[in-house]
Length: 468
Image (cartoon, rainbow, N blue to C red):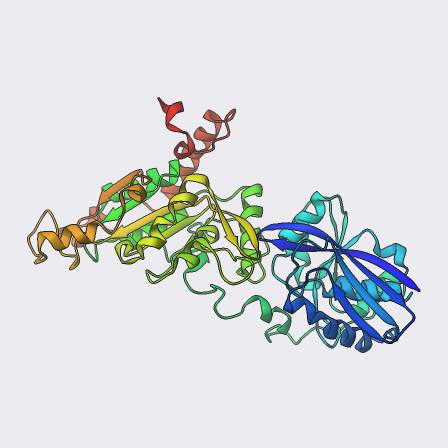
């Protein structure tokens, strides 16, 4: 009879729970039983692990095998337990010394050929392991940089199960041939699946030197709106831009993330953890240190904005724009139910999603920018009379934005159309993004010094009673 145990991590949102993976071998008819509240993808790990162990040159034990995931009351999902299950089985079969496995956390999916594939949520999983006192983690080789962001943890990146067996058994580590240069890495395929949000407006925009195509100097005129963008970035105030099409509302919103200061270490870890769970980490960049920018289409559902989905809820746009900008263009065209769902995360800075499979909590402290036309045709203006909409139609259109939602917006600016003189005039162009960003950074530093002994960081976070 053989017994071995190691550890892995079960993620619930961006929070992790260390799970002890136990393997027990007893005489009897060869069978493989997996217990501990696994989901469908985790139940299928039995076939993946068996094939990976055999194809890695290790014998599969022909005995009654039981693998338990403890605590059994915590739901487990995903394929990230494969590596820990395989190690525990090999430890019970005495191919690896069981004593070596006890204090190691293993995270990774196994291919049938024994290759170790990355999974989503490596960073929050390693953070949970570190908070529980574990100092050694084993992750896929291509995710080692992400796991190494956690201080005080020794990270071992392996490309195959064969390499892991050699390291733990103190044997010569075999050299695994990497994939050909210039070809896409198949190990990353599961992290960039269509429909996860990649290249759909949910992307990070950094400072102007990282995104030279978006500069405030491109915006002609609109000096009051430019000032509002600067004030919004300096104080963290939500912004509402209202004006006819072509006035520059979208241009201003797209340039706001480049004005925001770079994220500090703690903010970067928070943002990276959310994007890791969502599978949206940029390739080759394990740490996101710039303000994210999320601009969902106006057909987005409530679940797409605040998070949801079948089973364990996944982060929505409000969490993907955490510490960054959430831009809702054509805001009146959004569902009223979806817009009203933003009120709670705007107030609390996080969103709590309850589903039958569990309750998850995602961070959601974002800077919201709303943009809307003044009327259904978009031509209503104070400077000319081109609008043909009936007064009742205009009122109905503007009433699509509820009072409680607008009550949470500090800055409201009317953006009028640019005149021909402004388009052709030499002095109509404003300052560059770099110039405005320097002033915003200085304002944020003054606010940080002023609020040093308080739980707040920006002017918008200071409650009304303190202001009074």
